Image (cartoon, rainbow, N blue to C red; front, side, top):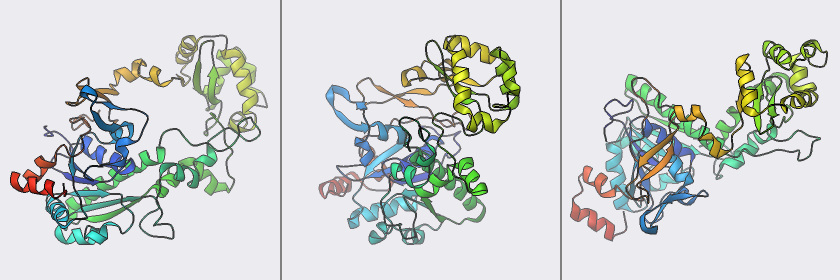
Length: 413
């Protein structure tokens, strides 16, 4: 599978991570052309293989053990199985490290050191190795030994504190976001750090250890909301579906659905009042400042807007907003996302050949990096079966068929 024009063609990544954050980072590198070799436990594999509410259906009822978590984070990888607690497994991994540029792992802090597979040990084998450790709380500190998953960090990093229905309204309280956003952002931070380390190595020849923590990502991803708190010391209120940058910004109801409206700037607000046939609202003392519209009198303003918007269909209202350049977008349920003409135009659903799937293919979510003009991200491989490429990769490392069979008999692979 050619990676001739790929940004990371010629880069080899050993992905020893499991579930979501680390695998997402490895997948991004694979999308950009790296040869990503996923190392999994024999007979069990990545825990993420059985996570999620759906799975890739195999031929003749065969279980492929490719749940939603796994399929979302493991395309463009080759899977090998390896018991790294055995000396023979460690030897295979050391051979692989000698050929690699990057290793990603998300084991508990210090766990791989027991097997001579920590950064310092592997640095002696390959001084240029970029070794990325992904953990919940980081490599040091009083909580470093704790396990960590996405929901914990939505809670402890502040995200839940600013997400949910406002106090005083029915159902008020903190709310977890549906997607595993901390995992996803941590995966992206993993890939960014690796790319930066590769550039550093290009200049200096020096590898390095990267310490990526879900906690760090969870705090950083609050972005401007957390920055507001650092500037004024005042925790912001939860706003439900309200925007954080000004108002009006919220869901508005129509005859047949909803749109999300963002008219936080003064000029957008002025255009909206004209469109509504209520230009006097622009200078109304309740709404003449962004803070009043977005925070202080937000509910009152949204009631006024919704009374007007319910007179139109979503399509009619979107066309009206587009005509006067007011930012708005239709609210979509998941099936409707894939019917959206812009989503279809951008090719965000990619049908990928899958030799073991019942239909011969699997639909995957496209990489958002697919529109680079010279070296776009591509999907070249479907998520792999457990150990699908073990013999292939070991053959590349110099193991013959007899030795591979012996390692299978010993349950090393």
